[in-house]
Image (cartoon, rainbow, N blue to C red; front, side, top):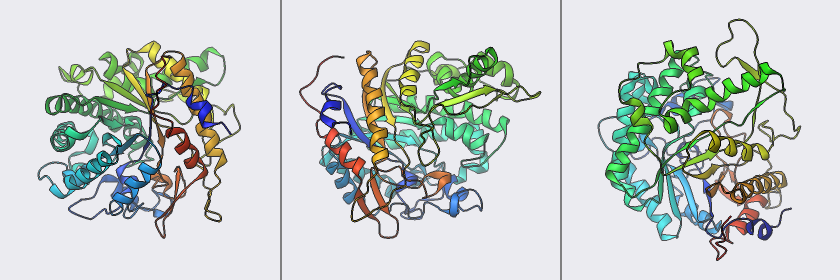
Length: 457
C-alpha cells in the first residue's frame, strides 16, 4: 500500500483534494418540493434501458440526509466538494416558472459546506435535462441552449456569491454521443444527425452559460468538465494510426476544438458536416470564450483499430484489445500512465487553462463484512492514478486539484445500483454509510492538505 505521507510529499501544499457526486445519482426525492421529471426519470422507467429497472426515486436519499452527508464529507478530511445542481428542481419544466424550494435546497447545501469549511465546486448540468424540454427536441433543439442560459443565470444569481468555482457541463461526450448516437444513456437515441445537433447545441449552451455566469458573477471561476479520451492505436500500422487520429477528432475534438480553437475538426466536418445543424454567425465566438479552468474526468484508455468495411461511418474504428489484463468490475482497463499521456497531448494541441482532475475512480463491488469494506483494489487504483497526477505536477502542468469519484456508492446510470464507485459504501435498504478501506486511506491523504509544503513543481 502506498504510504499517504510519501504520496502527499509529491504534491504542493496548496493542492486541492476533494470528492465528487452528481444530483441524479444521489439525491432521490424525485417528486419532492416541486421537482419535475428529467429525461433520466423517464429513461429509467422504460423496460430494458437500465439494469434491473433501477431508478433515481430514492438513490442515496441525499436530499433528506443532507446534513449527515455534509458531515461525512467533513469527516473525509477533504477541502472541496464537487456536486451538480438539478435543473428540474430549479426550473421544473426547463423554461417558465422558477421553483424556490429547489433553490432553497442548494442554498442549504452551499451554506452547509461553507459552515464546515468545505469549498464548493458546482456543475450546472450532469445529464438531468427537464423532461418537458423533450417536447421541443431536447438537446437536438437550438432553443434548449437558450433555456440553459437562463437556468445558469438563475442559479448563479442565487448561489454564485458562495461558490468557489462552477462548471457548465459534465462530460458532454456522454450527453451527446452516448445519449444520442449509441443509445446507452437518456434519451436513448441512435441517430448520427440527432447526435450532431446535440453536439452543437450543447457546445452553444456552454458558451451562452459562460456569458451568463460572467455577467451575473464575474468573480466566480468558470470551467467545463470533459471526459477526454486517451485514444491509443491498437497497432503501429498506418491504418490504425489514422483510425486513432479520426477517433481523437470525433471523441475529443468535437468539444475541445470549438471551445479552445473556435472551430470544429476538419475531418469531422468533411465527413459529417452536411448532417450538422446550421452554425449561425457568432456561434463559434460564443462557444470559444476563454475559460478560467477545465476539468478532466479519466478512468480508462480508448484503444482503437481501423474499421475497413465499406460504408463504415466516421470515425470508422473498432475497439482494440486491452494491453493490461487487469480491469475493474465494470470491465474497464486499468492504465494510469494513459492519463499522464492524455494531459500531455491535450496541452500540446490546445491552449488550455488550469486543470483539475474532476473525476477519477474505480468500480469494485465489495460488500460490508464485520463492519468493514476491504476494497484494496480501489485503494491501489487511486494510489497509482494519484501517482500519475503527481508526475504531471512534476512536469510543470497546471494541475491544481483532484476529486475522487465518488464520495459514495450511487445510481450508476445504465448500470443501476450494481456498480459501486464510492469511497463510502451505501446499503440501499437501510441507507447506512460505511467508510471503505479506500475511503480511510484517502482521508489520511487529504488530511495532510493544505500544508506548508508550497514548493513549486
